[in-house]
Image (cartoon, one colour):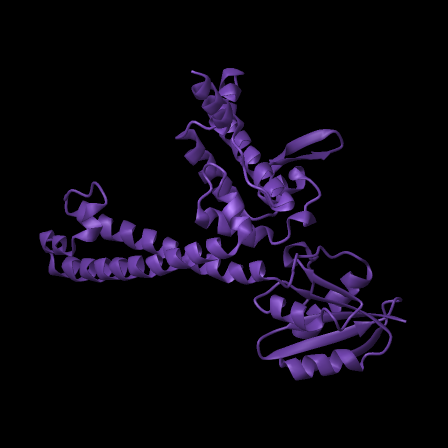
Length: 340
């Protein structure tokens, strides 16, 4: 007999609801969220077991905990779980998940047990750090602009003494806090950069990605961590959608309602568009590819997005084939120079 188990998990307590293939509720249980309690309850259920819970901060731990305990495990995307009317509580949420699992209405979120999944914690912390640096710099600079002082260049962030140029004591106090925060965060950023260099040395996949023009060690680490397993993407089109580099047409009854992105990883979109910007400052064959698009009449924005897709497709190919990028344009140029 197949049991469909919905789990509403929280840091303190977790609620299970079990239904059969007819949708009849067989059991419900609330337990303290500990490894012993969770495993004990799931193991007490007899027969075939399908289990689901929503993607949360606990989901990777729960996935690792249950992946060998059940016959079918789905970490579902809460954005695609249909909303249930009525009051919300843990039991109703778990019961609803069990029913959606039974009807095969859930969209799974990718999970895997490898070191690249662990790397996501690093890139998440680095994103938070760099975001805080940018916010602090903007607010620090705004204090000087409000006083009509020059804020051009990056040197002002290396000169704490400039705080004295502000005439108002309260502004000086706030600016002093911002500049000390910026200097501290910049020092922390250096430690992250050392860690990125270390993991680049350790992982061949990141070194391979770094051979692509516009892909640095940091971008390579981001791509590797977010993809984890390149073979889960059937083709480049699926990967473009995951990277939010393509839009899909909304259509009903023969009428178009515009184009939208599917849900994916915006970080990858920013990475590949940023890599495209880097390519445009070089002389590689990718730059030539972009220039050819412009000559064909494509708008600059569209050409840049096409270049970002090209870089994304190359990145996926390198990860799948465990190889490096070889720039054909550069090879041709070098052979021509040798002949001359």
